[in-house]
Image (tube, rainbow, N blue to C red; front, side):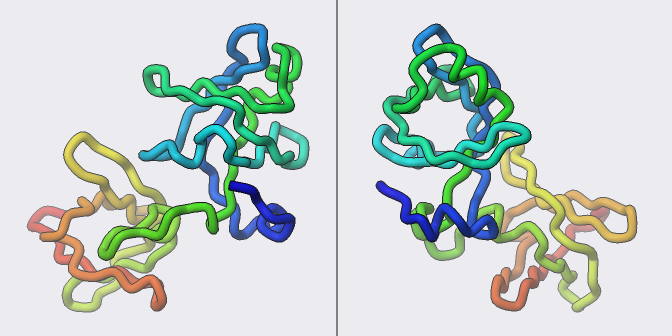
Length: 177
């Protein structure tokens, strides 16, 4: 899938999908720590933006990518030796939001949930979603207000509704939360 110039230039629409943590081998491959559950955005032929520390983002086409343990080993078409790969280490891997597949009903991307105002079932403001955490059993919302932090499980019995247009989430907190 090819990116248009407009998609590349709009920084507000770019999503962080990984970080280059290390060069791999002598042929220009890099190890990417993915921030994705599903790796199709890193399939061969796709284009991504790579933003090494202290420089601007550059568009790269993925030549090959394979999963190894909890990282991806990626070869970009224009990176053909270890020195070139080393220059990318620490870089952020970005993609335009338009490249994401549509979310299924009642499923949201984490990036859409960060910043939502959270209210309890009675309408009392609890805080704002500051981050998301993945746990073994379910995801967890990290909700902060005035220096306090609450961890709220992202499960149907707790999350009553999410209204992205209004920027709100309503939850029914179990006893003790």
